[in-house]
Image (cartoon, rainbow, N blue to C red; front, top):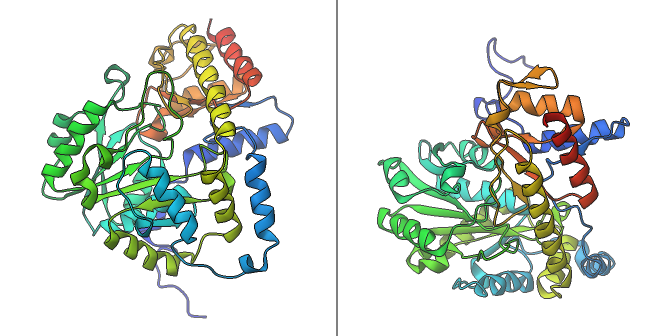
Length: 402
């Protein structure tokens, strides 16, 4: 075998520069410690703690026994699943045909594919921060450049048109828009969303909007889809979503992207080489989820609503912590800057990264530091865990700091 030339890196610079998912790393470490007998409570989970509803599992079992499901199927997804997906988005005012839907191996693949389709080397994408850890990696793997637009708890973690305009130049290709947000739980009101959508339409840039948490909305907040609010964006928008969060189906890996016909056709071509079709059994399960009763999703949402209120109340009772009430998803994103540089259990943390390590060491709770989301000074606490574990973990925090 011919040896590699001296000094030549073993892998591409593009791949070498990508960091692993911090959220998955935290979850894996928490699981490792628990398996070793440590009483770790993890607030790092980005998935519901519930089991997939039984009627969905039953549909998958039936599909697995059907010989027709044992072979390749259409790359963009089952026709009836694509229609069900289109119908679910039409319920929120999006004018979409099933032919514009491409089923992917989770919403994460849809994000990756979208940027592969839209970006050429050097193209810039505006990303309001805090942001989900996968967005920058997907952009960079498409040879694009993430451009971060900072928000804070003082602004409700909402970006303004003026901020977007200031970050835009001739290389700006797209805006990544997320509501409800991971990691903050922020949900944009319709008027703010409309202003951003009209700005993007006037700017002539693409909008990639991630709507994976669209069914997890609380209180008086209301979900709106950006291209539904501003229909003229339809020809330059890509909508990302999936069944993972609403139906407790993270492990089934079924997501989708919706875009203009040219985008859907290009996504199908890419996927034909990348992964072919999504698992037939998982697609059958997703179809059952979208066409089945809403009892289970509604019950899960009610549990999340109860837990978010408990979490916010308990976090705000900790000296040095300020936590806004999230309107969506299943995360809080408290400001922990008041705990930095002060004595906590005889130790001092200079950063929230350090603080996360301290909390894991001292009281065995796992949180994801804000540095992972481009927001040092904050941390993401998921409330997708059992009520008793949530209370126990936050009680440990109160005792440590109080």
